[in-house]
Each structure stands twice: as C-alpha cells, then as structure tokens.
Length: 197
Image (cartoon, rainbow, N blue to C red; front, side):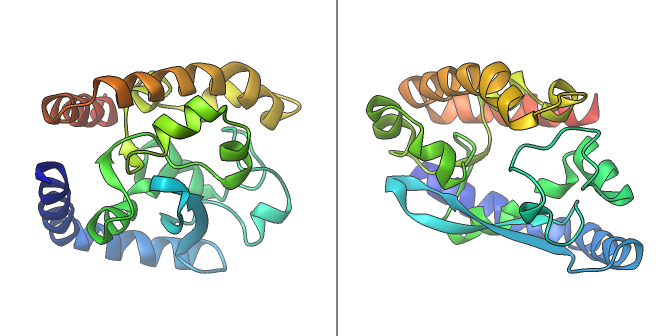
C-alpha cells in the first residue's frame, strides 16, 4: 500500500514538473519525423495482465513490422531525435503515466512483450509477474544502455537472448525476492545518478 501511494504521488508530481519537457519533446518529435509523438505498445504486467505502455516515439512509423523488440544503437529504424531520446532514456518518461494509472511502479522488473514472457520458466513467471513492472530495477542499472551491447550484432534479437536476457532475469528475480521500500528508494537514486553521468 505504501509503495502504491508513493508511486501515485511521485508520478503525479513528476508529470506536473516535467510537463514543459513533455511539450518540448512532443513538438521536436513531431517536427523532426513524420508520425505520432508517442509509441504505444502492449506489455505484460502484474498477474499476466496486458496493458498499453507509453513511450516517446524513437523510431520510424511501423518499426515493429521491420524488426524485433530489441534495439541496438545502430538500428536503422531509429530516427535522429530517437537516438538522442534513447541515449538519455528520455523516451521512457511517458511511463510515468503508466505508473500514475497503476499499470506500473517506479521500481520493478521491466515489462516485457508477450513473446519474452512466454519464454519464462514457471518459477520466473510466478515471481516476476507477482509484482507491478517498473521503470527501473537492478537489471536496468546493470544494463543501462542496452543498445551499446547490441550495437553491431547481425541478429540483435539473438544477441539480446544470449548476452542480456539471462542476467536480466536473474536480477529481476533478485529484486522480487529482496524487495523493500528502502531498496526502491536506493534504486531510484542510483537510476537518477546514471542518467546524469
């Protein structure tokens, strides 16, 4: 209950404070590349329930039909402004809306597409889907710039599954088993520090 109240208040305050930034980014995205400012896609949340995840659009229109969900820094689907947004994690800011609505938490395992959820073991599903997915967690801090690891890979999806996914799942399981309000605060501050490094 404390976690949800904190999420609701923090995301609400964040949305108000960042509203000028949202407006500027919306204008830049609309002017720099044809298409909508937001990218909305299905993710799997708590108890396996699907929800619509909000992001600032960093790719060309219909990018999901031109490749998989993993994105390398040199992905040709990225727009010019999209490269900038991903570098500084700005494309993730609209997920504060998901946190405010209760689909997500500020801290928790990153929400996955159904394809990767279906690949989880029963133990992983039982643990990871028992909590709200989050904007950041231990796995996010470990692999803050996923695109750098995938850059140059001939098959980014295969590289993701071999180089990133196993450790990501291990750290997500670790978070679920050891989670606490103080751990969440620690992860939030470490994430903010990462952004400004």
